[in-house]
Image 1 (cartoon, rainbow, N blue to C red):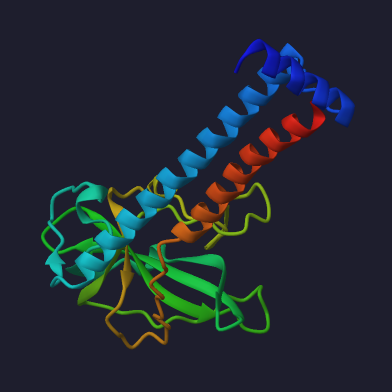
Image 2: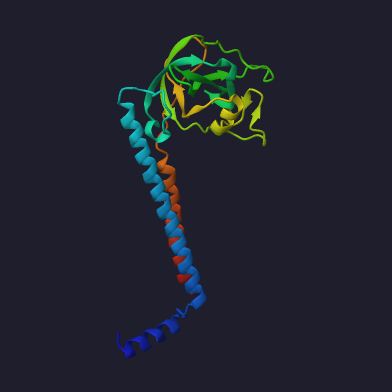
Length: 243
């Protein structure tokens, strides 16, 4: 615009009571916060993409037949979310109860027992299912022992299971608040595959195996991304209004 037009515009703004003269520090602060909010929004979008990709992989594996778990040490990423089958014998003396697990609104435990893989020195952690706590929490519920050679079919998941942490204690005898594979190996003195199997085939042990397949969880990250982008827009609006 011409200088005459600019002067006329300034005079008009003065008459209306508006002058846009932001301070340098205000510009810098606004730019910094807008960049931070946008980057956080982009990060949440990337997290949503990761979860969608993981969920798509899970859905793909669900349509494939179960694979046999090797007798040699494997990598978690090669089997995670896959259906596997494994044969061996339960070592029931190492059974633990993972606390603070619910089923249809009832409190209970997940029963975890290692399985010695057939023709191997390795063990694999089996999450055998859910059982109610009972009226007296000082008494552990009875679980039928499965002796002899068994075949387990199930879904491979990461072996680190975290629940509500009630104290700094990780274990209370056979009841654990959180499952940690390294700690479990130290407690048992046994080497284990770096994974956990959620047992799906039925057995005569009275346990409930109602594993619900979760959604991707990406919607939550998308919601967070929208919030960060709105904060960036709000910062710009506040900057304009205050200046």
